[in-house]
Image 1 (cartoon, rainbow, N blue to C red):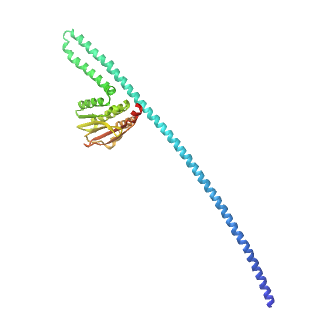
Image 2: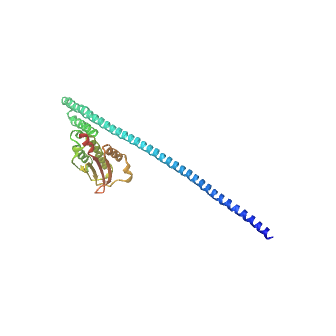
Length: 292
C-alpha cells in the first residue's frame, strides 16, 4: 500500500513538473508575443502620429502660402485702388483747374466786355443814363460771382504762390463771409509737393466749411509747420465740439482720404478751447525722393 501510494504521488509529481515546465515555456512565449504585439502597435501608432504631424505641417505650410498669396494680392489691389484714387483726384483737380481758367478767362471777359458795351450804348441814349448804376451793379456782381466760382474751383494762388498764400486768402475770405475771426500762420509749406499742397488745402477748406456749419465758434486758427520730418497742418476752433456720430460724416471721411492720398494721416480731437481740432500730418520723404 505504501508502494502504491508512493507511485501515485510520483505520477502526480511528474504531472506537476510537466505542467510547470509547460508553463515555464508558454508564459515567456506568451509574454514575448504580447511585448512584440505591443511594440508593433506602438510603432504603428508612432508612424501614424508622424504622418499626422507631417500632414499638419504641410497643411500649415499650404495655409501660410495661401495667406501670403492672398495678402500680396490684397496689397496689390489696395495699391491699385490708391493709385486709381490718386489719379482720379488729380484728374478732378486738373478738370477744376481747366474749368476755373475757362470761367475766369472766357465768362469773366464776356461779362467785362458786356459791361463796356452797355456803358457805351447807354451813353448816347437819352433818358437812360439813370439805369447805368443799377446795370453796372448787376454786372459787377456777375463778375464777382465768376471770380468767386473760379477761385472755389481752383484757387490761382495755390498754383502761383503755394499753400501759405492760398490758405491766407482763404482765411481772410472766410472771415469776411462768416464774421468769425480766422488766423492763419504757416511755415515750411514750400517743402510740400504740389499734390500734397493741394490735399492739405482741400482739408483746410473742408474744415472751415464744417466750422461755419456746425461749430458755433467765434474763432478759428489754421497753423502749419514742419515737425519731426513731417508737415503738420492744424485747424482748431473754439466752438461747441463735435458729436460722436458726426465723426463718420462724409466731410471727415473725405479729409481722411485726402490725408491718405498725401501719404499721411488725419487726427480728430478736442481743441484747447473746447472746440474741434483737426490735425493732418504729411511726411516730407516723398518730396525729397522726387527731388533727389
